[in-house]
Length: 246
Length: 246
Image 1 (cartoon, chains in turn orange, yellow):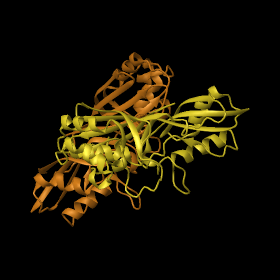
Image 2 (cartoon, one colour):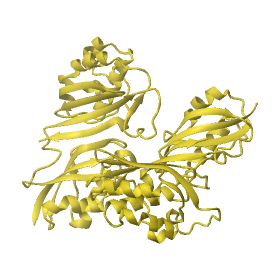
Image 3 (cartoon, one colour):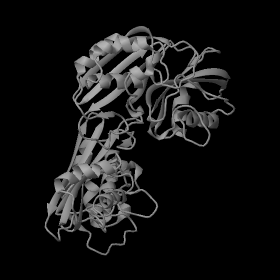
Image 4 (tube, rainbow over the protein chains, first blue to last red):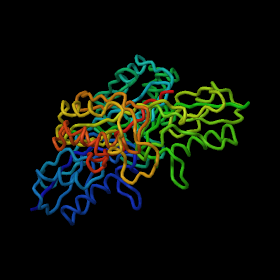
């Protein structure tokens, strides 16, 4: 029966060279396509909402694929999880109308970035946090974050060397920062994100938290549209694609 | 200056082929010896208290080494951690009298085994827990554990094919099992453990928790001295060497 299936996917990105399929290296897309083809056969490609980088995790990546899928939709989750490595879990499988596309139809996304503000490393958490030794000024970071919320040209927060020609204007709907014990959790929701945008925003906020950048400089940084004015790029292991909105 | 140093070590065993050094594969001992030799030079070997298997973790592995160590002892922790991969952390370095040996002088050890009693897998926890889907009867497991405490010949809990000729009599000082949300935590303290003993005890307790073995059978299993009478061997990823006693 011809169906269009939307999957909700959780993964530990540590052992993958990112989402997007590439020859000869392990990728999340590659593993899922292999499992789908073992199960259903003849599925050309799955469309992921976000091409997460190597080491980046997801609690709510979405991906869609169409084809002649004979296995009942309600059994797909169990059957796929049986074939997938333990680092990837399918959380949900939904039927969508023909033509629905996990990426093109996405209205927004939420990312979470986890910082461990602690002076010692922790072997068990190293792949899941950005370890920042020096104390961070949470209040300064929150003040800076308020300037980032809203509709802006975010070219300053786009990885240098990005060649996409499309607009760099995006809306950050909310950017919240909270502390729980030694953990600092950044939640950012928006209609779309430029390449490395969340990691550069996080790095800039960490630089603010260390007093290298003043929160009051944020409007100037954004208006400059210059990547060099913003802060460093935070590492991939603290980043989680939390949710996709349709 | 000639010194005998005792290290306290924490590691995520996921990416290592165990503690013990072997050619051409990553081992915890191999990484630490490499770091020590970079720092001090000419150290032949470090003696670990426990030869943990591939995938087994430690919060409190101990290892000693002797030699002409010029770096001040109080700087060893920082210097070694600078050279080691993020999966290994030196927590402490202490000076001990000549002749002290981390393994031969150990009076006892504590292991912790972590079970996740939950019906779904979790990509972020897969390397740190034994995932057991079916509900476990905690009370039955605790009843069985009481029979294991004490001084016994524990041959039934030693990996089949072990060829050590020494005695298989050991004292389990305490064996406690508690539940925290979906997590079941087994803590076992004893004067020494046979090869795979904690994993076989855990597997046997899980079989008890599933009703495959009755708690009342425990004395018979122990008295049989027969590995085949005991339960399955629990996987390595739930096991942590927690503490060594001197």
